[in-house]
Length: 230
Image (cartoon, rainbow, N blue to C red):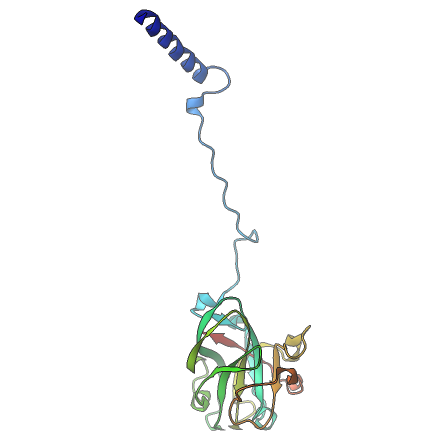
């Protein structure tokens, strides 16, 4: 019985070896399948600049596309609240507003100048201290801190700028991402991307009626400012 079992086992082993090396392919030599390369979204492998590439959390547009915009006259924009819409896709802690200062007027007499953030209901979420000193020196991008950082859930917000005082019309200039009123294509109040509200303001009010957004000043050449968030 032992002899028969041994012979049977040996024959079985021979059949297995014959199957591995016979016609139909050498199974032992068959290479494992190569994993397909993961496709790159868009096909080109290129993705445009993101705020995170520059240590920011959000922005109104790529600052590399921001041009030079005149701050108009004190009579034109002084005391008006200028709004630039920004849409957040994820929750952030908002601590600073970055402003692109293109040119300065060292002789400007500024006071009661502020930046702030309003939510989609027109409620002021936070604002800076008076930024007048920062607007008369160093024409660079500047991080201007909010008095109280706040948690900003995804949604629509409006960055508000208020200027007051006297300055040379072509001296105080800000970086812009749009050539004025064209940035509002397809939009209407209370969701304009760029607008002004109110006149005669010396501080940012606690609430705004966004249905009162106006483009009258925008259409005269007061182009859309560039802002970043950190």
